[in-house]
Image (cartoon, rainbow, N blue to C red; front, side, top):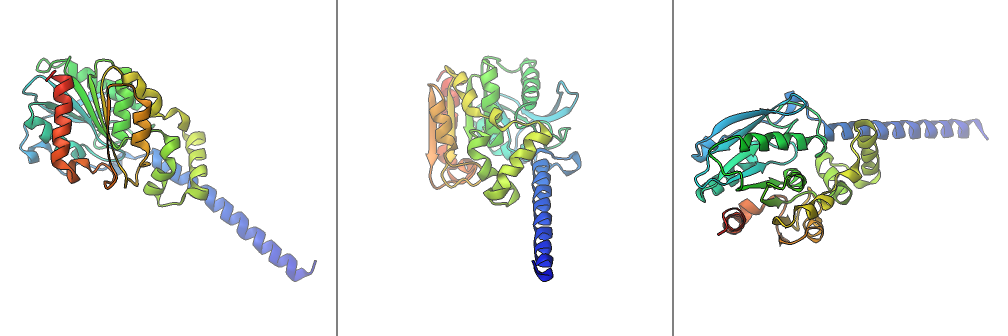
Length: 302
């Protein structure tokens, strides 16, 4: 081999090694960023229930890991309360529209935040593994109140919050009704869509490596994050699912996948024109009618 060819080959190999190392570093960093949210970087709500003319209380609970979690409680007029959980790296503000809507129908709202979100402490997002302890802490707080009926508690979650709501309701039979808007069905079904949305990176070759780092460095096993395993356990309590066909955060097939896995009673509202968690804004009137009727039927027996 000529000297010039050897030099060219060496340069090529060097560039290839640098590219591979860069790819490994980039995907490892993205995996870390997806599962971590340093407290100094948490998003904070720009509005409170007062901006929606709602009376409310600032409330806190401490989870089993000693982290303080923040929430808002909007009093109930009929004894029924809906726990409301926002989405991934979002804030309680996301649920204020729903809280105001349900208040007009007599319901109270416990607008919750889990670890590593909002003003809640923590920086590790385990995608449901440890967040179930947070949800339980909120439930324990709610049933300690004398102004609510513990037999009239429902839950409503958006996106990641929808997945958490499904998972928690599967574990707690005292959650009487579940609404999940644009919920993750499972990480295996939606990881490519979600990673591309949150990182801007294409599926190949980045997604498989990000999943690898997430599992090896952070102990999160993607096959364990699967709402299709939890949702059948909610029956005979009802589930109302919503999914937009233009969703770019979770796979548009997530709603149907969850619906097929659920047992009766169940309902799916699929709108091919809607994006992620668009129902309460783009279909506001129908959203209010259907969600209020769902909770009226299953929490109030109307």
